Image (cartoon, rainbow, N blue to C red):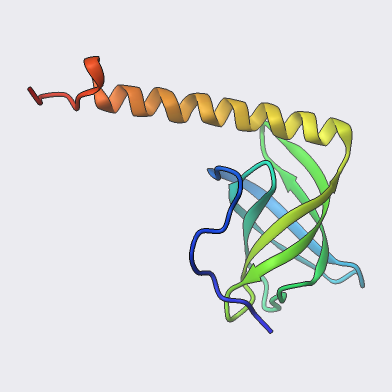
Length: 130
Protein backbone atom coordinates (compact mmCIF):
# COMPACT_ATOMS: atom_id res chain seq x y z
CA UNK A 1 0.00 0.00 0.00
CA UNK A 2 1.33 3.44 -0.90
CA UNK A 3 2.23 5.82 1.86
CA UNK A 4 1.33 9.38 0.88
CA UNK A 5 3.80 12.24 0.76
CA UNK A 6 3.05 14.56 3.64
CA UNK A 7 4.89 16.69 6.14
CA UNK A 8 8.62 17.09 5.68
CA UNK A 9 10.37 14.21 7.47
CA UNK A 10 13.86 14.40 6.02
CA UNK A 11 16.86 14.53 8.33
CA UNK A 12 19.08 15.83 5.48
CA UNK A 13 18.70 18.85 3.19
CA UNK A 14 17.49 17.84 -0.25
CA UNK A 15 18.75 19.37 -3.49
CA UNK A 16 17.11 19.50 -6.88
CA UNK A 17 19.23 17.53 -9.31
CA UNK A 18 18.32 15.83 -12.57
CA UNK A 19 19.78 12.46 -13.54
CA UNK A 20 18.65 9.31 -15.28
CA UNK A 21 17.41 6.70 -12.85
CA UNK A 22 16.78 3.00 -12.95
CA UNK A 23 15.02 1.32 -10.04
CA UNK A 24 14.95 -2.48 -9.79
CA UNK A 25 13.06 -4.54 -7.25
CA UNK A 26 14.94 -7.45 -5.75
CA UNK A 27 12.87 -9.75 -7.97
CA UNK A 28 14.58 -8.16 -10.98
CA UNK A 29 11.71 -6.03 -12.33
CA UNK A 30 13.19 -2.71 -13.38
CA UNK A 31 11.69 0.72 -14.05
CA UNK A 32 13.34 3.75 -15.60
CA UNK A 33 12.77 7.34 -14.63
CA UNK A 34 14.47 10.50 -13.52
CA UNK A 35 15.94 11.76 -10.32
CA UNK A 36 14.01 14.77 -8.96
CA UNK A 37 16.08 15.54 -5.87
CA UNK A 38 18.82 14.02 -3.74
CA UNK A 39 20.19 14.19 -0.20
CA UNK A 40 22.93 12.31 1.62
CA UNK A 41 20.27 9.94 2.97
CA UNK A 42 18.13 9.29 -0.09
CA UNK A 43 16.36 10.68 -3.12
CA UNK A 44 13.08 11.25 -4.92
CA UNK A 45 12.65 9.42 -8.23
CA UNK A 46 9.86 9.83 -10.76
CA UNK A 47 9.25 6.65 -12.78
CA UNK A 48 8.25 6.75 -16.44
CA UNK A 49 6.97 3.18 -16.82
CA UNK A 50 3.48 1.76 -16.38
CA UNK A 51 4.26 -0.15 -13.19
CA UNK A 52 4.66 1.59 -9.88
CA UNK A 53 6.31 0.53 -6.68
CA UNK A 54 5.08 0.55 -3.12
CA UNK A 55 6.46 1.73 0.18
CA UNK A 56 8.71 -0.88 1.80
CA UNK A 57 9.90 -2.34 -1.53
CA UNK A 58 13.63 -3.11 -1.39
CA UNK A 59 15.29 -1.71 -4.52
CA UNK A 60 18.57 -1.33 -6.34
CA UNK A 61 18.94 2.21 -7.62
CA UNK A 62 21.23 3.36 -10.43
CA UNK A 63 21.69 7.09 -11.09
CA UNK A 64 23.56 8.53 -14.08
CA UNK A 65 24.34 12.10 -15.08
CA UNK A 66 27.32 14.00 -16.49
CA UNK A 67 28.70 14.33 -12.96
CA UNK A 68 27.49 11.23 -11.15
CA UNK A 69 27.28 7.50 -11.66
CA UNK A 70 25.97 5.81 -8.56
CA UNK A 71 24.54 2.43 -7.64
CA UNK A 72 22.91 1.92 -4.23
CA UNK A 73 20.66 -0.47 -2.41
CA UNK A 74 17.69 1.27 -0.89
CA UNK A 75 14.19 1.04 0.45
CA UNK A 76 11.10 2.86 -0.78
CA UNK A 77 10.00 4.98 2.18
CA UNK A 78 7.00 6.61 0.52
CA UNK A 79 5.29 6.49 -2.83
CA UNK A 80 2.51 8.41 -4.48
CA UNK A 81 -0.84 6.68 -4.85
CA UNK A 82 0.05 5.50 -8.36
CA UNK A 83 3.54 4.42 -7.26
CA UNK A 84 5.24 6.64 -9.85
CA UNK A 85 7.09 8.93 -7.41
CA UNK A 86 9.30 7.16 -4.92
CA UNK A 87 11.09 8.53 -1.88
CA UNK A 88 14.02 6.12 -1.54
CA UNK A 89 16.26 5.83 1.51
CA UNK A 90 19.83 4.77 0.77
CA UNK A 91 20.74 1.63 2.71
CA UNK A 92 24.02 0.56 1.14
CA UNK A 93 26.37 2.56 -1.06
CA UNK A 94 29.98 1.72 -1.87
CA UNK A 95 32.68 3.83 -0.26
CA UNK A 96 33.46 5.37 -3.66
CA UNK A 97 29.76 6.03 -4.30
CA UNK A 98 29.38 7.69 -0.89
CA UNK A 99 32.41 9.92 -1.65
CA UNK A 100 30.98 10.89 -5.07
CA UNK A 101 27.58 11.63 -3.52
CA UNK A 102 29.19 13.76 -0.79
CA UNK A 103 31.14 15.71 -3.43
CA UNK A 104 27.98 16.31 -5.46
CA UNK A 105 26.04 17.48 -2.40
CA UNK A 106 28.87 19.82 -1.36
CA UNK A 107 28.81 21.33 -4.85
CA UNK A 108 25.00 21.71 -4.81
CA UNK A 109 25.18 23.34 -1.36
CA UNK A 110 27.82 25.78 -2.60
CA UNK A 111 25.57 26.72 -5.53
CA UNK A 112 22.57 27.10 -3.20
CA UNK A 113 24.45 29.44 -0.87
CA UNK A 114 25.87 31.45 -3.79
CA UNK A 115 22.37 31.86 -5.25
CA UNK A 116 20.95 32.89 -1.87
CA UNK A 117 23.74 35.45 -1.43
CA UNK A 118 23.24 36.76 -4.98
CA UNK A 119 19.53 37.23 -4.35
CA UNK A 120 19.97 38.89 -0.98
CA UNK A 121 22.54 41.42 -2.26
CA UNK A 122 25.11 43.27 -0.14
CA UNK A 123 24.43 43.37 3.58
CA UNK A 124 21.90 40.52 3.40
CA UNK A 125 19.12 42.66 1.91
CA UNK A 126 17.31 42.00 -1.35
CA UNK A 127 18.54 44.29 -4.18
CA UNK A 128 16.60 47.55 -4.27
CA UNK A 129 15.59 47.47 -0.58
CA UNK A 130 16.74 50.05 1.96
